[in-house]
Length: 295
Image 1 (cartoon, rainbow, N blue to C red):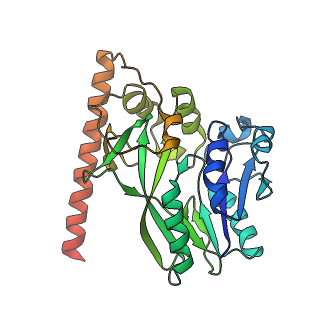
Image 2: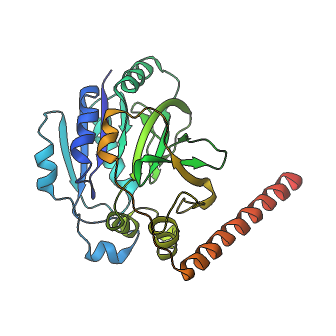
């Protein structure tokens, strides 16, 4: 069994060395997809922006013979991922893994993953569970059902199938399956400046009221803040202390947090934001009821 993994290398300087160390012992190939500029979701960012992570940063970390740097100028996230997937298929790999630079697995979980991949003959897409950490490895997001464990959009693609990426991390998989091998996701563990850069360039840029979310949910966050998810606010209810045992790699993400000083206008803005979320949630529930009645 041959396993390839791909890592997207836009603005990943603080992650890249650690994620390579996490994956290298367990896979046969790592494709690092490196663009010089952002995707085209926000045209101004694409026209004027540059990758904060330099090619030299990547080359310095990519010393293993297992690593191949794939350079390109991709307009979308799915085009970037498909470029690596096509290489993996052409080179005869059995499985193609998604491991973004802010995603980590424990050693025990890696062993379970490899054993499962070796035995699976039915699925073209495997989806792992994950913990989404918030601002620090000490805080984790809770979902609307109260759990701290969610599922990502995809992890392992079977290369022998006709599977490909259709939108960002989503695929045209015909036989997906969720496997409970948990990923530690640190995509929301960063400084205010790093989050501002993320919001300008990521694949969901047009789906977010960036100024409002950044102020009310990110910069002014405290343990009472609700509706955290940028594009689907009620999906992430709030962030709470992570009380489970921490893996060794979590230490580097244990960022110090500060207590925000909120103005009265900020509190009013947060109330308005939350009210809109609650109303939209009720409207959605009402539509679902009507759909079930008349379908």
